[in-house]
Length: 159
Figure 1 (cartoon, rainbow, N blue to C red):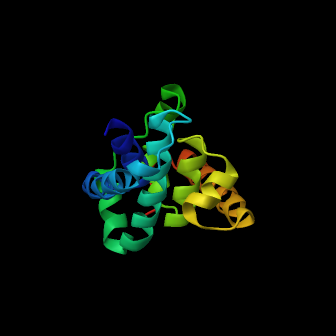
Figure 2 (cartoon, rainbow, N blue to C red):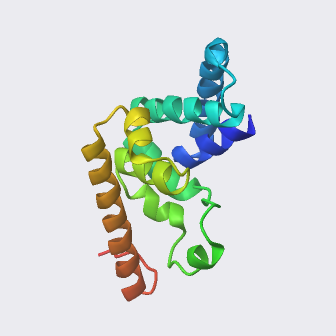
């Protein structure tokens, strides 16, 4: 369950969504238990199933209202260096919330969960070139937003 919760918190936008997605992923893991061959660590096996299922859940449950709520209630991603995260003008999750769902999912899977490009392609059921493009565009948008906020002292442009 801790692995599933961690994956859910990183891939969803709100804690409520994370709970819902974690339950769905846990059910998928239980249904798939008979396919576990014991060749690798069970944590890794469960994490892969959870990532796939939660990515699909995100695709089905993404709405504009959830994006607004996410910017207000987002939890910080804890795997990045706290020195880098603390130096940002706004919380990291605020930048991630500005990305489209496919871009955010690809970026989080790659840089927070450590998935390879082919693994992300399999999890999101997208072609490898699409995954690469999503990650590149997401990184560019986050960098651009950080530069913008740095120039304006961390305040979002409201005008």
